Length: 289
Ligand code: SAM
Image 1 (cartoon, rainbow, N blue to C red):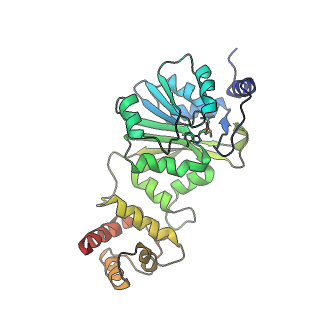
Image 2 (cartoon, helix red, strand yellow):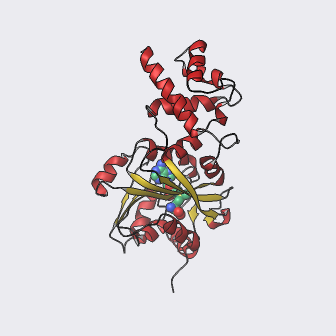
């Protein structure tokens, strides 16, 4: 009889006397339906290369490797490595890398272990570093087509947010600059051990082959976005002062040229407005140097 994810997890945890680390965000998924929905939401076929961050005891890893061409799973916790050797022993199209994903050279992993990609990032992410992981893949231009990740509901809401809402911020703009988003599954907290304090969402970020709006300098685009949200109650004229690049008169000229009312707040700007504002800023910034 095939064991459920719940039964398997409990057996393994008992056998190895595994102690969950809260600081590493270890909440293991124990629901088979959600596992299936993640694999389906990532549309994994036998041509796909997959990177997983944080395989835990390998539940999702196993489900994905059964469908994919190859899976590389990056796990920071060395106590999980012998466990993964046991739980993944029947599959040979996967590799476990014992590293901190934030320090890992993902381009090198893709080149050396995944035939140069393209890859899909599929993971039940450790909550304490969800945003840095997703941004690392996007900003470092890893050749990734789909990012299908379990995140706290509140983080998914921020990724999906529209202008003039309290959830809308730098993360919303960054994610939507690169990706279309969809909700793959809603996951209540009781589907994990240990049970976290919040519900989760599996969100699909589908990286567009081309950016929707032309941005001349991505670094300045992100600096502009961050400055615009740094103090949400300020007008854009005051917020942009924190860039430290222009005096107020010059900023007024820049805003006028971008067609933006200087009394507005950054949190009301669409992606397109951020793109055109940052293009004017980039041009003027370079002219001043
Ligand atoms: N994939 C498993 C599952 O769905 O049951 C476990 C998910 S658990 C939420 C997060 C996993 O990420 C844990 O295995 C944890 O040890 C690992 N992890 C935490 N920080 C990490 C990091 N910086 N780099 C790689 N893995 C990390």
